[in-house]
Image (cartoon, rainbow, N blue to C red; front, side):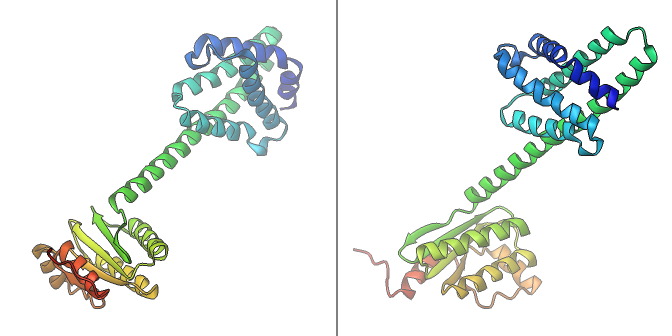
Amino acid sequence: MSDLAAFYTKHFDEIIDSTIELIQANVVEYSKMARDELKKRAVAAIDALIRDLRQPDVHAYQQHMRAISYERFRQNIPLNSVQQVLRSINQATANTFRKYYAEDPTLLLEMVERLHELTEEGMMGMFNGYEDAQIEIISNQESALAEVSSPIVPVYGGILVLPLIGSVDSRRAGQIMEALLEAINTYSADVVILDITGVPVIDTGVANYLLQAARAARLLGSTVVLVGIGAEIAQTIVQLGIDLTGIVTRANLQAGVEYALELQGLAIRPR
């Protein structure tokens, strides 16, 4: 609607000033912000609105609110504060409409309805931005947790220990293998000990992940030793017919370390 774009352009400064006053009065997080900074933000938002009015297929306002809400989430600013900013822009514009079009209710209604359409697009972008930020944070937390729960520990020259804790799914298995292969290269490891004492369940999927890790390690010249197989897991492996051919197994971590040292011609002896 070109009339609405022209209205914004003609009354731009008035709408900006009104928007700033409403934000300062209603949004606690912005009440003490410098006016110049608030004006900069309000101008960016309304510029996006005007662009949408001139090029409806661009969805500039939705994209702007998505980017802004993503940034505000990262700054720990509540969603309702961002909503109030958007409402302030809406209210400032509507108040200006009424001031100049009070005697033309048909045109006033038409412009207000178009403003509401744009506001809905802005709201959609705002929620999408918060969702983007939440997903990113959750993903980062999961990655951090995976690193903590699967630390790779160099215990001696050429010997690495990877204690696995918790369940192992396809995503985590990929992360474990990537970290393992990187560590083998970094430490020039001859032996990698996989300790599954903390893995509650072994099924065909987990077994396949272990076999894949062993094959990948062998390609880099490392031997994989699997330790921590309890009686219950051993029974499950037999019942499922899981073939661990190619993986050396030992009862516990101590036995695994002793085996690794033996491969290097070393041993732990009492003094």
